[in-house]
Length: 371
Image (cartoon, rainbow, N blue to C red; front, side):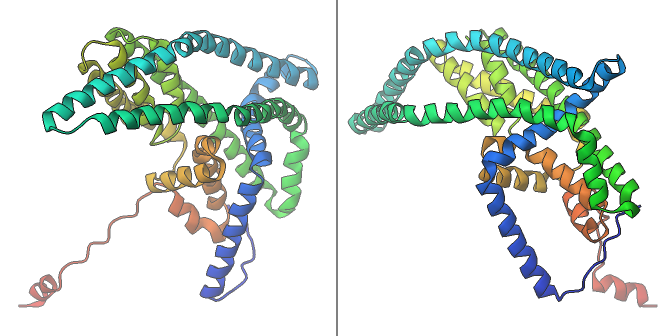
């Protein structure tokens, strides 16, 4: 059963122009209003995940408002405990960062001096460039303190807003659902209910799968780095697992930090290559076993659309956009699949490959026709 929407006939060029104008207007609006949209989108996603927990408390004869407050409090408690663990590990790493940077620059200078002697090139320009770059980095970091303070202020506002949004969304869920049912009319009520149910299931299963994947990857990274004797293995493993949530580029960024730590703290450069090999091996396991079985089975989006979605949402909303690009695209596909005129677009977003059309060469036809 699909939503029946009367299609108005337009010439092909008119459809293309209208679609292009509409797409540009939508992307512009999404970019301008990102400060409003991003917290709201995250709040809706988290509210959908927490809704079953609220229902459990409601079944225990607890008032709905109190159940929502308890659920939010427990969620914040878990996040705070995890944040405290990560902060305690990261504080040691932050204190050692200047020393590590000095060691890294010293090693880099020695390497440049050695290569310059081998290739008979004066190393002075390289050393001057490193010194200048380091000074510019420090100056840039100092001038960015004001912007960082403003950014932290905005982040605090968002952190305060998201729990309020979540509370309101869960509390007014019946009102919001009834709004969508009335918006599409009584004749499409069952179809709207089905779409809403499927969206809820998709988000819940996808985020639970993502959480399981993150825990597994963090454990694999940390254990591998501990076996190699790399310092700050736990915090590097956790950071790497979270960076891995950024599709396609996060894993490479995650590998660079422990490689640099290995170069600075170990006597042999082979440790850096071992770290790279570890991350490549874990990525192979993640891409071929963990993601297909735990995460990707919930989201039927092909790889091309996934890359385009990540780049597009990243350009619009930065890293938060990259994190929610895949589930938002999956929701769009799900909606397209239930609206008759938009079904071809839903097919384009999906991962169902049609059978290949094999065209036989003309001379084979002639051979078949010949006596």
